Every structure is written in C-alpha cells, then in structure tokens.
Length: 261
Image (cartoon, rainbow, N blue to C red; front, top):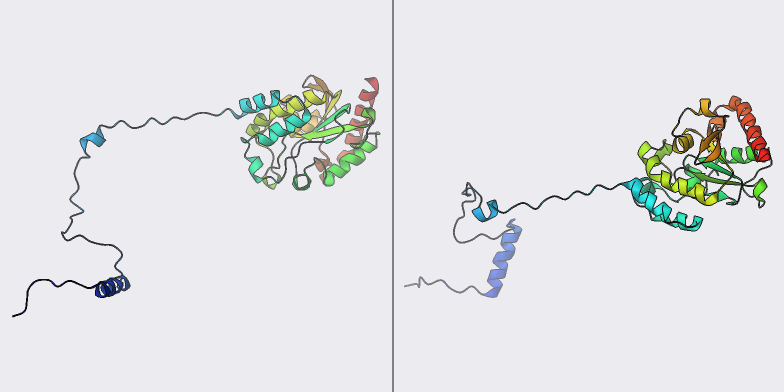
C-alpha cells in the first residue's frame, strides 16, 4: 500500500517547476486560501477617516520684488550682470544660449536701450550684432558716434530691456518687461549717461509706459530722470527703408542735444 504522506520535493525539481510556471506566464504568487478582493469595507477605518489632512501651503512669489532687491544690491555693472545671471524667475532664461548684457563704453554720454536679443545676439552674447545692429552702427557713425570709441564724447553704451532672447523673436510679454525693469533701472543708474535713446516700442513701454513708436519718435521726453529720445528700431528701417529719412532727422536731433549739453 502506497503512503499518502506528501513527499519532499528536491531542489532540482522545485526549480524546474518554477521555471515552467514562469514560461507559462505566471508573474505573481498566490496564497493557499482564496482572497475576495471585492469584499472591501464600505467605510474607511476610523483612525484614518478622522486623521486631519495636511494643509496645503501656497507661497506667492513676486518676481518683480525679487528682481528689485537683487538689482539694488548691485554696486557695479559686473555685480549687476551677476545678479541678472543668478535670477531664476524669468522663463526666457531657460531657452536662451547666453545672457546678453551690454556692449560699448560704460562711460559714454549716450545709452541706447533696445528691446530684446535676436538670434545673432543670443549666439554672440552682445546686443545689436545682426543686420539691425550693423545698420545701427552705420547710423551712429554718421553723427560721429561708435560703440567701440574710447572717448566718452564719441562713444555709446548699448543694452536691452530683456537680456534673454524670446522664442521665435516674439515680442516680450508685459510680465517679462515688468520683472526685468528693476534691472534696467539699476543699469541706467550705474552708467549715468546724459541722454537715453529708446529703440522701438518695447523700450518706450519699459522706460515711459507708452507705446506707438511712430508717434513717439523724434520727440524728446523723460525716462528714468533723463532726456530720452524715442527712435524707430533699426529692424523696422530694414523693412521700411523709406523711414530712414525720419531716422536721420532723429539722429541730427540727438547730435544737437549732445552739443547743447
């Protein structure tokens, strides 16, 4: 008579059976007793139900205020550049290659404020180096000014409202202008130019809170406590060559203002 007691399974047989189950698609173990997974309690356990939920704390970030504090702490142009490089609240920074800070002589009497870097400026890390920048250099040269001049009377200093290129060269958004404005204000205060040239709508919006460059151009105004001359952007002049006559008139006005000062 054969024994009804279960026989011990040797190691080799157990491994063979396990490998066979894996080959058949078994991917989890089951217990000896069936489990009814649909038999769930109607109510959650009291201890868990009565446990208070952790409060959600939301902290609003004022990007402009953070920029203002960072800008005010900059005692030099180099410190301002470092503060802008460390500023993490403008999303444009994540898509740009370089921070475009400035170009020219910081001791110049004339400070030019542009809008934002384009593709060429983003690549080189300097403002106004593309076709529009080359036209600007020729325009300035016509009245005896140059960004590379060593003498302050013959030099210009150039920067932009935004130091990072917007995607697809789109116009800067109002919130982007607002958060970077404290850096622009501090930049002007550190350079201390005698006159400002506001190139294009975005520069006028940031410096004077006004738009409509075709109406504003050629008329002296005040921006950051300084005489400011709105001018059409060189990129516009490339698209509308007939507007160069008005731009020449604005350049003569700039030359006359410098002579008066």
